Image (spheres, rainbow, N blue to C red):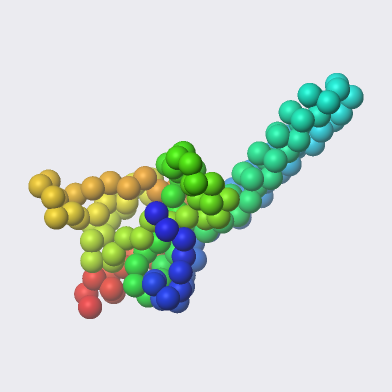
Length: 158
């Protein structure tokens, strides 16, 4: 897992986001969730206000996360966003929860995507020869998926 660094991965050629309809609907849902928490806990005492603030903070964190890119197509590698359920929980890993973190995948190792774009298949040097990476590609627009596949195929021919 890593953060995007231009000096390591080169320039970003394509950025794949979730579809606009998903981003808007999820953002509205979390906004309503936060407003409901404020209204419900406003007159319940200090402990309840703290719970409301925690819920609002969680809502803002998830709104921020849904606006982050799912994939970055760079000159040297495909950077795949790490789903939040795969984030490390050890001490000192808080930066991965705040900033978008990516798993770099060499274009030469990519075998393909599952039909629903939830899994990225890569070739490995180990026995069996293939590994799976969970990705959040289901809600990437079809036009972006085509661009990503075309660039991967072009890089694999080089």
